[in-house]
Length: 521
Image (cartoon, rainbow, N blue to C red; front, side):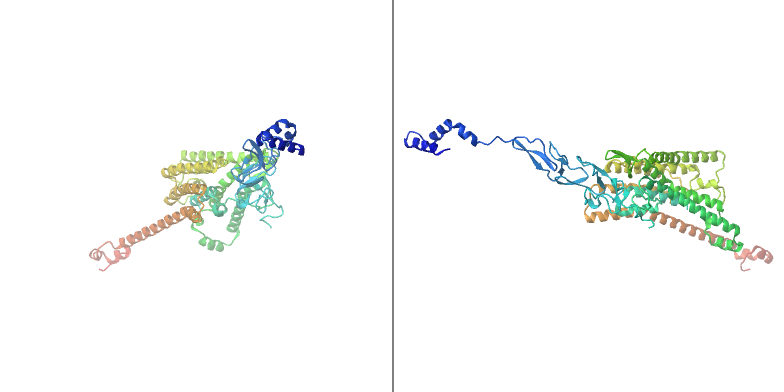
């Protein structure tokens, strides 16, 4: 607006015929070309896309690019929508920051979407939920799902009877149920399960670390062979006096059985110990999942499935499973049935027939129970494997249902001859059921300090309950036997003086001496 425009509007006001509004309106109508340049261009009501860490949000009639709020993220350079919600098993502080939860791994190669995967081993991925995308693994671990050792130069190396079998199976299954307070590693040792997957025990990586599990049974049988060989050499070439002295100090079981029978019995025990770990290793070799768009071995994620070396390992795993869960139980069942038909089942205490070890622990009508027990062990493990890829609630539901059914079966079917072992068999399954039920409290995030300590204590008590109960019933049975033996001795001693003194007096002295009858004449 020029000075002349101002002077003309003041002159119009001085005439007294026009108001301020009339003067201003008249000027606007006559000078549109002037004031039109004063008006800014209309705003853009819709942005086309937003950059990394930002999302497209509506504000009134417009949309703007705003930084992603807490609980969301954006990794796309040309984002045409709002920010993506944070994945279930991750924490998002806003913008581009995505941190996986504890025991979860974030695919660092993904540039658009946060791919989160659960790690196969607890404690190696994002410890404590505090990590970054470039350093997600615990010290000493690296690779996809943190399944490899970070440094090939640093490794932790180099650097009885049916009672034992039941306890072994109990601890093996218990180690699968709970991983609280590091107890999984303790249970793995007790159950003779060489759990090398979460540890850098040997200078092996990938699939070969899984295959190393099969070295454990081989080494055990090799050591057994050495011991049996030394025993045979000692019995053949050692002085007779030395053999007699050692034999007197040997356990009662070794005294009453030959070296061959002891060797067979021990071999059966070792094979039973290794049965479940070998099946578990085989299922691990077949557990292939899609990680970061590639089908890989889940517990050795650097190994692609059904290619190269894994093809042979996969075929080997299939042979192991079909042999241990099919050929071995069926062969044992057929053999035991043939013994039954031929009436060759021997239950004499000191009989040395080797095959009695296959049915000796069981009642006569359950002579076939050994192959059934082997199949049951494999079936329990397969149920665990089948539901391992589901969510935690579904997985725990399957375990509770499985152990509930097994508990009912074991209440009505008691195959073991010894009462204490039958109780142990039942209580082991009931404790599995209780352990699985207690897991629900952890899944419901019952995380107050006092409650967690109480729950951990309850888990330990339940875990040890079968052992305590077995020791009690076993000792109770020993006491009862001792009492029965003492009563029998008293009766036997009293039977010599069952005649009255008057009756003894009527017997000639020579007869009394010959019959060892004592008394007052």
